[in-house]
Image 1 (tube, rainbow, N blue to C red):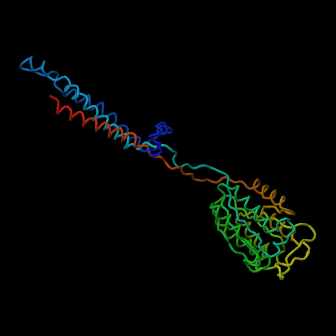
Image 2: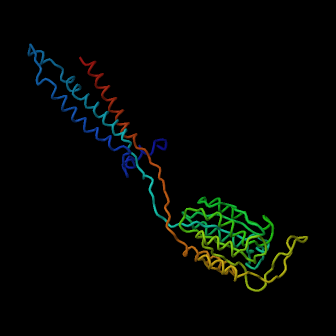
Length: 342
C-alpha cells in the first residue's frame, strides 16, 4: 500500500547502515552552534528593569515560552543544513583490488575439416565452440580475444573483458567464412600481433586446430619464435580422434558429402612451437578430453593483475535536509503564534 514512498522513508535503518560523509570536515561547523548560543547569552542583559511591578505580573508567560523555543528551532534547522551539506551517503568508494587475470587469444581453426563428425553427436567445430564458451564463462578479469583462421587469419574480437561479445563471436565461427586451408603460421602471427602490446603480465595463446600447416606465407616455427620473444606462451590443442573420421569432401544433392579419411594432425610441429614458447601441447580425442584440457590450462595460467571496481554511492542528504525544513517551519509557526498572542 505504501509502495509509492521512498525506500529511505519506509526503512530508516537503511540510512545509517555503512554511513559516511563525502565532506566530513563540514561537520566541524556544528561546534559553532553551541559557541554562538553561549556568546549570545553572554551579551544579553542579566535582568529586565520594570518601572512598575504590575507590568511584570501581567506579562504573558506563554509568549515568553514561545520566544525561548523559537531560536532553538532555528539552530536545529541550521544543524540539519550543515549535515546535509556534509553529504552523508552509504556505499563504498572505488577500490583497487588484485585478482587473477591473463591476456588470452583464442585462435580457432575454422577449416572445412573441422566439420568432421568424429566427436559424436557433434562435429569438431561445435564441440570446440562449446568448450571454448565454457572457458570464457569462467573468466572474471581476463582479457580475451578471438582469432579465426583457415587458409588465412582474421581477428574476430580484440582483447576485451566484454564476455558477451566474445561469446557471440565464438558462436558465429563457421567453416567457409575464410578461404579454406590451414595456415597455422599466419594464425600465430595474427594473434601475437594482438597480444604483444597487451598490458597483462601473462600473455597466452590457445591454438585449436585439427590439421597440418598447408597454407600461408609465414612459417609456424618462425611465428612461434617471434611470439615467444614477446613473452607469449602458446598452448596448442590438436582436435581429432585416432585413425579414420567421417570428413566432408564436397557438397551433394542433400548437403555435405562425407568420406572416411585419416586424421592427420602435425603433433610434432604443435609440440615444438608450444614447448619453444614455454607452453604445452595437448591432444583432444573427444569432447570430454577437450574440456579437461581447458581446465588444465586454466590452472596453469594465473597471474595477478589490478582491477578497479566501482560501487555507486546512495546519497542520504534527504534525512537531515527534511529535518532542517521541519525545524524551520516550526520556528516560523512559533513566531507567528507569538505575534498573534494577546
